[in-house]
Length: 501
Ligand SMILES: [Zn+2]
Image (cartoon, rainbow, N blue to C red; front, side, top):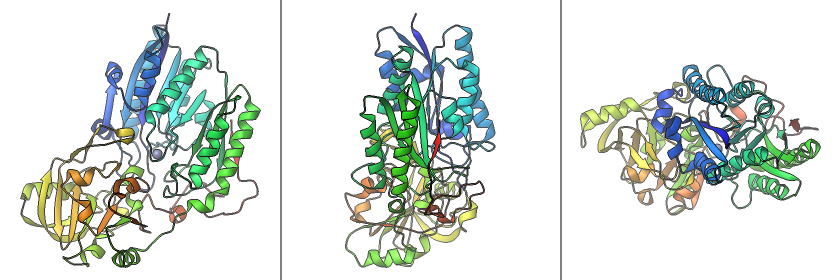
């Protein structure tokens, strides 16, 4: 009899401070696969699961449940989460009734939240655990921007996170997760797990795992510890700080083969090292006009990083805070900026290419961070908003901005999309016919991937101190849950690290 492994995915990163609510249609626009539809996946985390499980001769059989992935956004609606959760649980229950359930393997993000639950993964894992009981192994893979909670640790046997940011290793992490469940079922692994949390709430600007830098060094430490004979796996976390949940922080998660004390000790070591990096994790910021003047004084294209409006962090992408300053530069300074505005995109499509229209643009989806601007624009180009990701965790997948338009006012090209999309390597701009190398100012609305997207044409990247639900510094975010004591508000703490096990 083969071992039967239930496989599912719920992958979305959520934002409590803004963004567009994540309903079922958001998942259906990205990835929503039921039952045997999952089995066709060859890439991503599930592709990694299947490569391991299918590669073991006749010993393992996949029980597909549901795979739901959405672009980061606002909270998952209770209706959508209820639906997704019940489909996953029903599939597992059916497998149990048929006597075909030996383990559960879930691809989760770790920073999802619904309207009424700020620890969606903890809730899902708790429901899975109470359904399958204490002896069936439950393994989950996570984004390294996960918020690790007691419910997640307490209701899973092994948690393993991506090791790279920019994220490139979803498939490899999937393979590691599947191997963990195989090792448990074959009796080679009796996991003991601990998470060390240091209360550091910072944006992701200095959070790369590549080269040096504060989070790269934290990851390097975790991976050095993983080489030890008595350690099964280690993960390092830089928590997605745009959740409004209690006791958030980053640090290290360690799985050993049965040695809880060692897991606790090494998790603490990683978290304490991470805490020491805290000052280097806060970025240098520029005011808008300061950045523009600095950019004008330098040759070549300049990337203005408006991370406060990052669709990849759950923002709506509809900020126009930068627009007036770019328009003021006149016809001779070309620049490009993306704005999500479904009504404006529809208005442009109705008017047609070459038309002149007056738009009320921006802050239509998430109205709390600014006011729309009224602009008379020329419609330069209209598209269906489809593009293909090249590389990373979404390599080869199609992105859907929905009906989109490029409009021009003064020297500014405004790329208007109907829906937010994750920014990986700047694929959206060329798909809309924009040559970024011809621009003086390129607006990037993400905290990290702009580096690889625009390094071919720019050497100057200026991070802006703008308002929005995904700001470069968390200092002014209106948290309502108990996040303190935490950096940056409390920079010196005697005993900052907390252990979950
Ligand atoms: Zn992430």
